[in-house]
Length: 473
Ligand SMILES: *Cc1c(COP(=O)(O)O)cnc(C)c1O
Image (tube, rainbow, N blue to C red; front, side, top):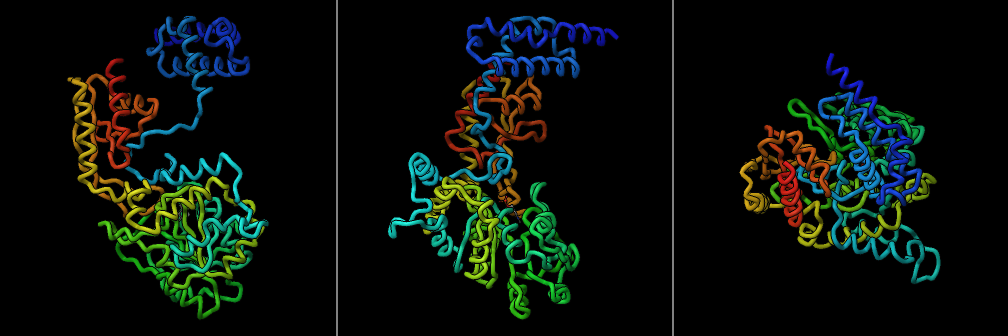
């Protein structure tokens, strides 16, 4: 009862939006801000206050609603609004290819090349040798073919676009045979059956979720069949009583019936990760060498480059794909080409690629190096001499992520932090709202940071954030 009355009283005290705008007009920091922005921010402040009171009136008192506090909130809202929404942050999740956090970090060469190409005109579609119009794909096609062993290559906006384009070109209005075990959904918005429908191809599922045999495909082939499709089960694995038809077997079947075969590799790697103590994952070259007509994969997953979808394969189908008018709608920007060209160039020497492409470096980072980073951070936090703060080392595992490889997890070392007097939830929120944000996770009542994905120069950012937190606490 009493609480309800307090709540009503507080709600009545919230000033009107116009009154807040008027107040802001006389504030030295706010007086040069346009009316449109002031109104937007005043509305946000008023709405937030209302929501806070309604959710828990105890956290708000009457003096939170006085002019000084309101103005402070408006100033903060204006600052937020005028600052960019998209900001760099510290990924302490250990998930290397984290789709919510921008997937792959670009290598230094790629960033430098992007900036150079962005700030001046370029030969994007101009053949400097011939002095006339050239191909937009020329800057990467040869390198991709060389690295994947393919006859031809093509690049579009992302792998979802590559799959759509491949299906539309090779199998519109015809049946595409695919195993039931491969009708996957990736990251909520990409579902193989939906992409298939949008391409105009007709889905023909065969086999069962756990077992599909060659004869299932063969029996489904009929006059209207256009394509045999294999999709990498990127983000899940079936164990137990399973049977799968290899790409090679599908390619042989395709030859027998004169049908093209396409594989969506999803992540697609140019490097054999089993050399680095991880699970064997077929490379793009492995897929191409089966004789598959088209193989598609992402630019920003295990490749470690910019967002892109890469199609490689035989000359005829890729040339057909290039001529599809849809290509124009999925066209890649010059910045992407610059980043992709520089990233691919590093793959000519695998050791250089592993050392300089952040996604590869993080995935193959020896656990001792991660442990050393965890110890450095613990020492830096220890130097704060804050009895309230305690650290624990946790031996857990990191994921490749990005719907990349379900079984690609690697041992790692995390630092779990507790601060006396601050709940784990508040700690997580403080770090998330820090500038720059620090994204970790809550586990066993600790704020856990996986050091695999934390860059060396970010250790001091984390330490500074804890200093700020402890000064406030
Ligand atoms: C990630 C993924 C896609 C989508 O690739 P984007 O580059 O994100 O568009 C498609 N298929 C598979 C199997 C994937 O893993």
